[in-house]
Length: 186
Image 1 (tube, rainbow, N blue to C red):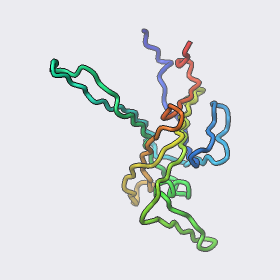
Image 2: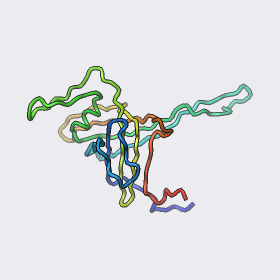
Image 3: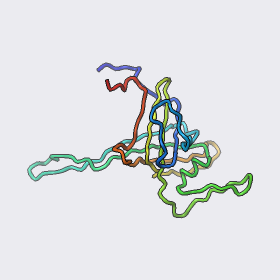
Image 4: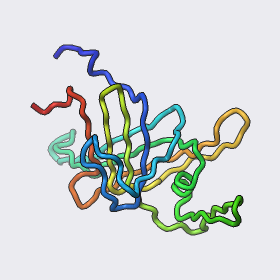
C-alpha cells in the first residue's frame, strides 16, 4: 500500500453540538442541525480529543501458561474539549441539572444543585478540512469528567469537559459520517 499525502486530514474548523437525548440528528452531511441542537460556540485551540478503547479479560487454562482466549468486556468512547464561551448551553452542560434564570433584566442566576441528577444528552461533533466534512453523532452521552475552572488574567475562562458515550437501542455507540473519498467501501 502506497503512502498518499492526500489522505492526511486536519480539523481546520468545527463545532460541538448538544441536544436533549432523543433529538433527531442529521442523517447526512448536508442537512442542517435540526431544532433542539445547540452549538457550544468557541472551544479552546486544543480542539476536541476523541478516545476509543476496549477492555478484555484473559481466559486462562490449566494446560497453558498463556491465555487461550480473550473476551471483550467493555467499550469506551469519550470526547474531550474545553468550551471558552460562557453561555447558558456551556455552563449548564458543565454543571449537571443546573438551571439559569433571570433575576432582573441584566442579572442572571445559575442555580447549581447540591445533588444533580443524571444529565444524558445527544452530542454532535462536526469538523471540516477543505471540502472534507465529518460528523460524529453520539445519541446518548453525558459529561463524566470536569477539570478545574481557572480564572486568570492571561487565558480565557474554560470549561474543560469529557463526554462519555453510552450504547443506545441501536447496536452503535456512535455514528461517524464522512464524505472523505479515501473512506469509500467500494
